[in-house]
Amino acid sequence: MRLREFRDLRTEQKTAKLISLPKRDATMLKRQLSHLERYLGGIKYMTGLPDIVIILDQQEEYTALQECITLGIPTISLIDTNSDLDLADILIPAIDDAIASIGLILNKVVF
Image (tube, rainbow, N blue to C red; front, side, top):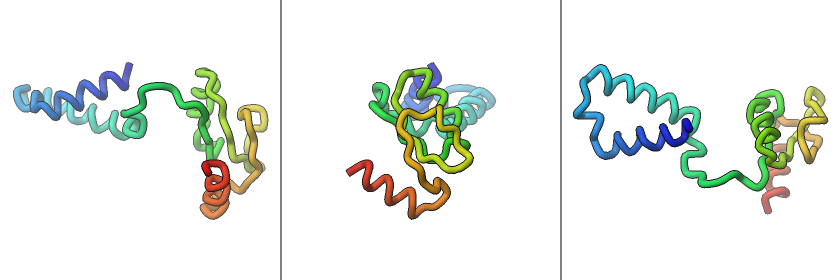
């Protein structure tokens, strides 16, 4: 729903329909487009659900993890001592704050 709205606003922006609107309405739509870009910019070209999702930090990405559980998408989660073991499907014990640890594990998982 929101993704469709985001795509429609982007199309209106590209076709210059926002210019024909009153200044107040155009400003409100640009603000809404900016907000949607911040939250949905990473998934704007997705056409379907992913096969699997890798969660790097359970505490920070709790909402994304709950969405994956709701949609039935399997998850791989890097878990630290403060993580919940019951939420993810596949658990990888690691220090989820260290960039070197994340890079090493993602290189092994992806390739």
